[in-house]
Length: 363
Image (cartoon, rainbow, N blue to C red):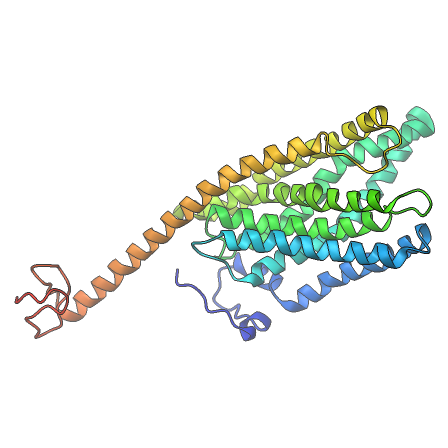
């Protein structure tokens, strides 16, 4: 398919008429009006985070919010630009990366509401069965390991599945990049909320606070990106397989289970890591990547291998498309030339021409 020309006009006023029905929801997601609505979610979290910081650190709230804001902007920009630049053969327009990042931002608001509601139900059930301690334990384990991965990956992944209907998602790397963008958007808002509550005046040192910021900005943010990228892998793979492309969005729901599983394992490791750290180090208040570090390293290594194969696949697809376009143009020239070709190099000859412009052979 011929690449679409992207302008500011068709960003704000996309032409929907004549498009496949799968592309229409994706086109609506790309509209800046939708982006503005999604940014409102970030603003709400920012206000809540500022208030939270003012309560926990009344004399340091400005510094806390400043560090939190810088971290939740700088790290996503670094990660997303790196992944976008890595697509050396066919970079997708930045409007797609922005759109999915902001979808992840909005997903954080929806997930917060659902997780809180289901967590309260778990507390109630746990309290009835095991008392107050049982309720708290059920809420922590149940929400972290079972509820949060399902809720968060479902909402984040839905945006990637919708965007898979657009023709720009046409190979495996695109699926990874689109999913990664949504995951990073979610983590940016989640981190802002966590950072604002990390510094407790009189209890937390500046070094501990910065350690926590780096931990979540590197370990947890990359984790969220990789979880949701898993939703996009199979969709991108199917989109690059011709006749199988129509099943891509169905493949997204299969990839969603992989994302939920990875997220659940990651959160379970967090609980184990917290318990181990409390037993071994006791007074240390900021998290150490004892379990998460190796887990992220392993996941990063696996994705490194997958990305290499995805880029090779992307290059092969582009070569096929260029060869197809070259042959199509050649056939068109043949029709215009009356099906006459140079006997030496097989270049189409214009009607009435006996000398080949390509090799100079007389025909």
